[in-house]
Length: 206
Image (cartoon, rainbow, N blue to C red; front, side, top):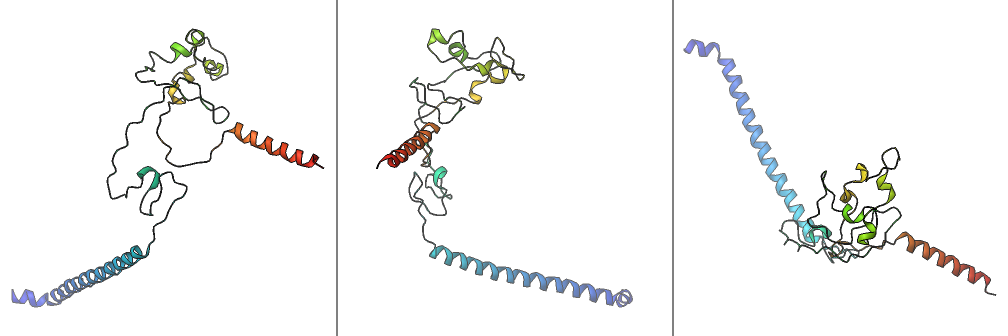
């Protein structure tokens, strides 16, 4: 045994040195990591202490700081649980709404709870089919809904336009999340015409 140890003594010494070196490297890395982490933590604390809250004047929900997601979180910090919003009521006025832009799919001005729209039945077409619209005093669907992919007119609604709520949606009485200054195209054109008329009148004035 002693002879075998003596023969392999250099190998044992090399293995021992290697293990010792690895242990030293591990300890040095651990100590360096702890020091670096403490340094970064101190920097974060200093930055948090000097950070001032930021207001968002365009928000409909008021003042929040950078740690908050304003509209969707409603001012609740991301590390806290928000109370669920109430179930907003679907507007059921049955009055046709103005379109916001050309070719906009009209919104549905009434509730559609329980409406069946599947491959077997389409509750919307009971009132909005061209054959029934006059009876129910409902606006008939556009002629484009009777066109196939080759622009040929069909006797019944096209399968491309069969599922109405792919494009048409109901509206609720929920408040807007973010204020905006959106104007319909008619309002933009009316303002432009009014500005042009004012400018022409000013030019004609002696």
